[in-house]
Image (cartoon, rainbow, N blue to C red; front, side, top):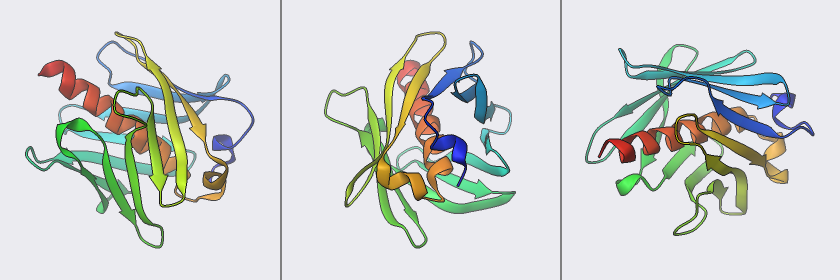
Length: 167
């Protein structure tokens, strides 16, 4: 688990370009993670410290996101709900995690398990350049999957926003 994700500085996602292909997660002035889309391959690459994941969305009626780790394809699958309202992820040894808006009309998104909120994505704002603050719940601070959850949260939110704006 990367200590940059659990420090005392706020974590903020920032979109770097107008097309939405490059995003940085910052703790103050420090870049702690990056997310980059490659539209030619339809694959996003997420990096945090020495960890690296790829995200690839597949399917239309029952979309899912294949999550690759260090070049391996689809070591986990994020099952999206219909209408872009989040989904679920089952990780080995962790059980089922859910990602969805905090409420019916909420602009906040949350990773939760049976015991409550793990990670919250707050104040997603901006039209041309998106940004959002990440809050890490106390129970999530020791999760080795924490960087993945933070990266996947932003990927799903940006993917959902792109799909909504194109329809």
